[in-house]
Length: 258
Image (cartoon, rainbow, N blue to C red):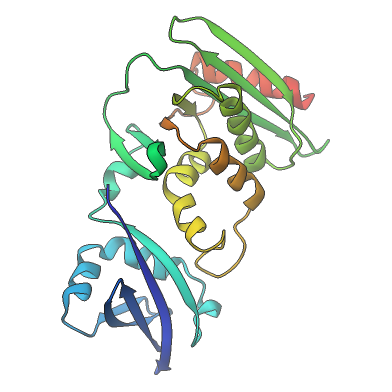
């Protein structure tokens, strides 16, 4: 799926509306947006304005998620669209989301069926708020059906952080394998790597509010260990009786000492 890079700059403010210049290569257009009323107006009728309307869902999501206090004259942001992104397919948790970083690219898309004969990683993290300890659990199913299990204490603290650490460690165990399938119960991991990370990288790991990405160091590690790989992400509901997900949860709890 083609990814287009755009830039925005807030040029003016009048009567609650911010005039925002959008640029794409040599094209320019102006839109107005009221962050309180969530009202978006396309001021100019040109090619870039038409493009924004075709990708309005992604554009509105960017504008709506940006905090009101970060709307000010002079604010600049680089962002990206996946041209004509099928949002419903990405949001359908039953679909497989692919991250393809082979040959220097950074593409993500949705498929219905997995590639055959690639190893599958099952991961989970556990964090004990009382003891402030976290653990990871990993099951790696090889292409011949054999499985290896791994468990250990994490170096990070927090539920989201241990989920990330678990996946990072699993990928590191398959450092020389270029095609991997990851099964996780974490939407934070799935969406973070396939949808959010490309935008953060464009802005030196900052959000649309101009702030550092939460867990920035972990996301940067994640981005590094996935370089050059083809990865399929499958989501499973946690604690739903899925055999290998349940085993990962057990291993993670052991690692956390709970």
